[in-house]
Amino acid sequence: MRQNLLLLTIIGILLSCNQADKKTAGQEITTVAQLNDTIATNSEQQIIIAELKRLQAVFSTNDKEKVADIFSFPISNEKLGIYIDNDNFNEQLAKNNNRVTRSMFISFYQDISESLQIDQLNQLFKKLHVENLITKESLEHKAIIKTEPCYHFYGVKVENKLVTLTLGTNSNKGFKGKTVSEDEISENDSSICEYVIWWVFKFDGKQLQLKEISAAG
Image: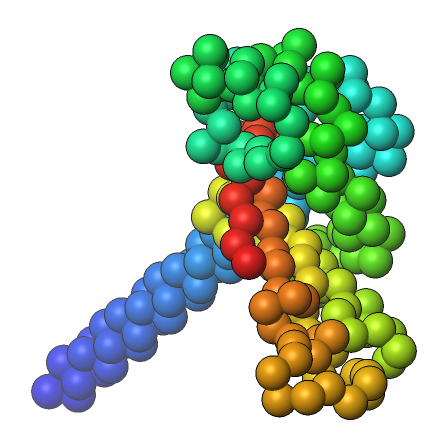
């Protein structure tokens, strides 16, 4: 009887140790998997950061040929949202079935760059430190000047393989302008100040490819 009890005790101890070993091994596998996921994510973020810096370098040149290389021409204007008061451009756009060609982009670059707010894209990269995306999914900045009725805002967000650059203007609620009558619009009214444009890029694992540009306001 004692021998049977001793045998059962030994078997119980062995089974307990075996279960503990399995649990420890499972925890180690989970830890390794989590570490691999973290490394992969950081690697992707590093590539995205490098790509954003590449775009920053291109936009900072304001060289129409280099900026044009970002786009895959011909491209539908529905994806670009270029609206400029230029009859020649609009006539060519109509002839090309609402598609923008590289030659059109270069020929009308000055007007197009204003429409797409490329100068403000340069400000975005100056205001936001894209290196911080290594630990964050989004960055934001508001450039509020007390004496100005409107302020600029900038943002970058990484989500689901999409990188969105956001820039626009909004009402400075703290602005104290001249007194206006009831039928006048104040300088910081939303109808004057509110505007936003989104540059959306798709990350294919190696590069950022322009997906679309849209605006509101």
